[in-house]
Image (cartoon, rainbow, N blue to C red; front, side, top):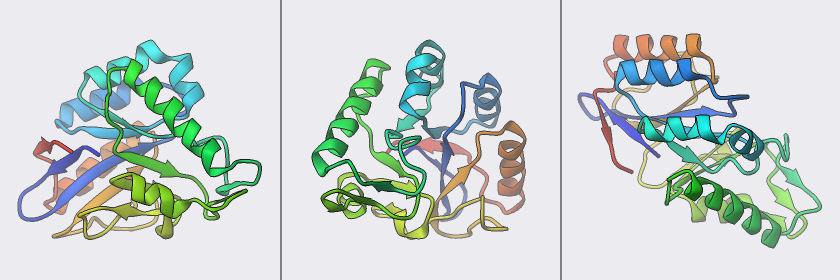
Length: 194
């Protein structure tokens, strides 16, 4: 996951989850703020607008694995096995590779009940990816990080810790996040590699 550093010890990774379509204004706001983000996009949205999404990649942003977005709202996959999930992960990785991104270090798990026909799959995916985000705190796993933060539910920004901030794919919300980050003194000033 791309991480944007700030002064002091705060580290913020910005996740933009489930945009319904490509929005050049989002990329413009990120570019103006000199911040990089990780986009979690449904596979069908990537396929339908692959040329436009390549622009996101060319602008220095990365994609996380969003292969389960739109497949399940609550995390339940009763007709899928571990093997089915692995196939979907692999197919999504190929799609991203075609877009110029070789490695995928993060995944988004929708819902709260991460169960398939073979049992619980959340832990397997948390072990497989450096960053695992989702709709519940149990979904969150940040290897080497000290916590997770969610703009959708928390009123203020974290201080003196590493965090991932999830914002809706909305330009006004992104601008508000950047203003809040600057106010709290954790505004991004540079982008670090994964």
